[in-house]
Image (cartoon, rainbow over all chains, first blue to last red):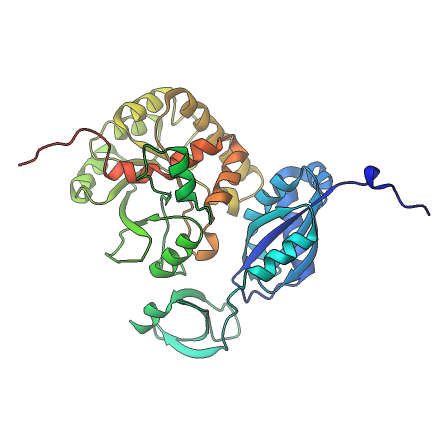
Amino acid sequence: MKPLPPTLRTKKRYVLAAIEPVGAGADQKELYRAVSCALTSLFGDVRAAMISPAVIDSVPGHLIVRCNRGGEHDLRIALATVTVAGSEALVLRSKATSGTLHALRKRIQRVTHPLPGDPEEVSFGGKVYCARRYQGQKVDLMEKGIKSQELLFLTQDDLEE
Amino acid sequence: METWANKISLLFPILSMMTVADACIHPYPEGNSSLRRMAVEARELGFDTIVVPDAVTLTCPGVRIIPASIIRAESVRTVSGRLSRYNDGKSLVMVEAGENGFNRAVLNIRGVHVLRALHLARKQSFDHICARIAAERGIAVDIDISPLIHTSGPSRQRVLVRFAELIRLHDRYRFFLTVSSNARSVLHLRSANDIVLLCSLFGMEEDDVCEALSTVGNLIAPEGPVRVVS
């Protein structure tokens, strides 16, 4: 089959979003479902179809979403309303929009995201937590247990007090 | 890097002291993030001021923490009574909106800085008369973006309609607005850019959002002639 000439192809835009917390373990499929649900819930099926979002890349801490040109503004709004992917609470913060993947991938390489350190056990407020420290001040705590694990976001100073 | 504080100072060169403020966040124990962590994240998201109800005195580099007192009351008499306790000149006094008559009366009370949670109040509870009083007395109306993020369906639609009505009144009477995330976690905080995008859902212009983000600083220290007090 003869491919469509470039002038007739649908123009795409790529949106780079940062995933927080960095250690969030949602996979690409769950992230796609979260973005798609947020978009449909906010703008309806018709607009979501026009935008046609697709998660095309996800590295730890970052996500690249493709959409049709003209839909990037609405896609960024939808990204701001994502709160959960799968069973994981997270937030997607849109960082940049580009017409090429190359530009966004270069940007990801430029922004060295502080990856969490090895998990360690700490006690806070009479409970035992699994702590992950980030470069700088940040410490994320997850309560040890099987169900309803409490998540706390603190700093080094809070733990030392 | 171009921050929102820089952007605002470029847009409004005369008011270089303008702040970029989140008008209400709820740190630990009400939420799951400590005040320090919230401040660190807020700074990274482009804010230089956060408003925290019943905040303790805490120094966070690069972020000013303004304590606030939120008054939830059924009657105006109760609001007046509580106001005398909270009105120390350092904290922001925020009153939760109610019926139309209640809102009008609250807007006339001296010492109230912000009328909040209007999206929870009944339709027509904030009308053109309330808007005029708010503009005359320099009282801000808070726009809470959390229901836009955390709700969906008819409840979000109701909030969008309410905020759109508010913006229509704001365009006519130009009363102060503030924008708050009401974040109980660092995951609920949104950047200034995201706030601009979310506010565009109900027709708020980017310049108006910039102005609303910088209102809090002016409410505590209103602009005006210098007064000799002693």
